[in-house]
Length: 317
Image 1 (cartoon, rainbow, N blue to C red):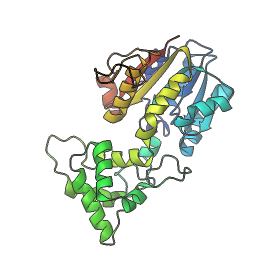
Image 2 (image 1 turned 180 degrees about the vertical axis):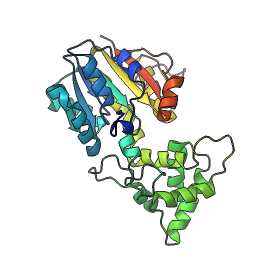
Image 3 (image 1 turned 90 degrees about the horizontal axis):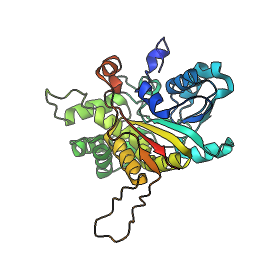
């Protein structure tokens, strides 16, 4: 979200649109649930004197970069090392009951993606780690591939990566493992995927993209915690508070969309059930009937924004 040596690390996606939906005027308290390098938070604080932002991130490296960037705002910028799934506990510990707005940018930080050591990107040969929080005590991507069955690996790659060659990839991973050569580095995995995926001239992405995405989501349990986070975030808003979510993956966006719809009163139960069982309740107004996507200029200047979709809601009184 910067543009000098540090700023080249990341450009804030849909920044103006985010500020528009948060409707900051001054004096409000916001939560940036995915602080990253602090670009969205910096813009909120620069444009709205008196606002305060509580930034949450599970990556200690991101926290340190954001701290250096936001130090000029003093006590108006509060940074907390945690997972956004703990938003209710975090607010309670800071003595705040409800906030005026919450932002969640679900994309991978460029600090992580451009790291040559952490295994998020296949551009570098690195250990298959992919943990966003190195202190969380969770399994790395390599450890998952060393422990799971063909079916379990295939399910992860298909569900989270929407990769139609998932079973072939999974089978070759396990075959390598059983031959005494487990897949432990990014380039080992890339070579295996390239041999497994049929690629046409129409494909614009690298054949390993979906597999790497799927493993990252599985390692960090990104999908598992998302729906409950959306519910908890809305519970943490004041009446008329705004919640903005930017998703980069179709499964994430679908979860956000359906949770917003359910909390706006839309029932997803089968039509013949006499009583709603899905928990639909009208607590929010959906502000984005269709997701907001980047324009051509933003996509050209920041190619990583091309799959971004922004959805926003207002908590009703």
